[in-house]
Amino acid sequence: MKLKSHLMLDSKKRSGILLLVVIFCGCWIFYFWSSRNKTSIEPNAEIAIYQARIDSLKRIKSVKSIPKIYPFNPNFITDYKGYTLGLSTEELDKLFSFRQKEKWINSAEDFQEVTGVSDSLLAVISPYFKFPDWVTNSKTSQTTKSFSFKSFNPQNDLNKATFESLISLPEMTEGSARLILAYRKKIGGFIEDNQLYDIYNVKRNQVIEVKKEFTVKSKPVIVLINVNTANASDLATIPFLTFDIARSIIDYRILNEGIKNLDELLKIDGITPYKLDRIKLYLSTNQ
Image (cartoon, rainbow, N blue to C red; front, side, top):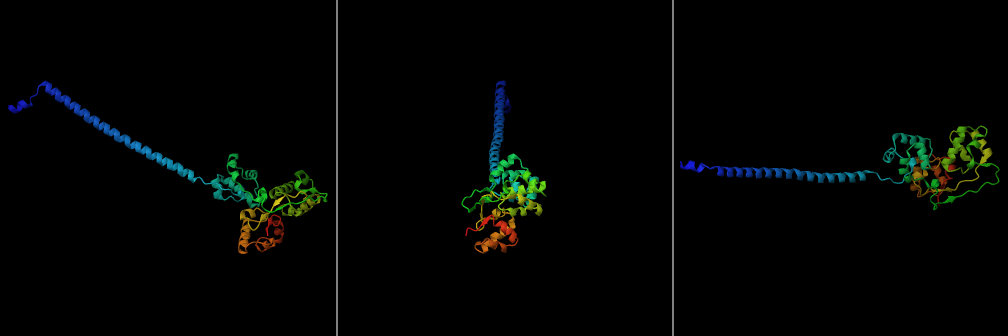
């Protein structure tokens, strides 16, 4: 009976105990809710920080992965070089087909005409085009050769001949006239009349008719390429010199400690006396 009396509570005590239990449960619920909220926020903040770092590293890597463009001769673009420049396969095929005909690109306009690249892409890559000195005439330190007029010759100037004046000649066709004008543009102007014989698909009798009416009077100023210092790309821009022959010239130059006389080039495979006569028009030894 005495033990039972201790467990007997009046209504006020029961209400107080109930209130205390409610307060305790509320504190317990608030504690676990705030702890869970805190743990869910902190990882999200850490993830955001790490993600920002990853994005920053990706941006740095993408910038570094963009290839740097160095000056180059557009006549010697490879498949990989064309890919890095943004040229399509079709545009590269047009360039390779043009070069296989032993034709040369001498300006940004020629490059666009041959490949068909867009104006926007041309504007990006054309500032890096590097043409040989004899095309651009930009280096004044090299030996220059100037030619005088043949005032005694009554013929018309071959370097000023027009399409209309050429097709008016006997035996001349429109196709051959265009080939003559295209070759004149390619080499920067005729230096001597016999260069007409170098034009592929122009017949001998057509050349004879041209030489009756025209001759070279206003010869261009030629910046001679020094055979002892030029690289293979510059040598390969000279008529009749392929890139392989240019490499052979450099190898011969290294083995013999320089080239003292241009006639030594006859020792190189692929160079004949006929070709040497033309090559001499654009080379010097500076000896």
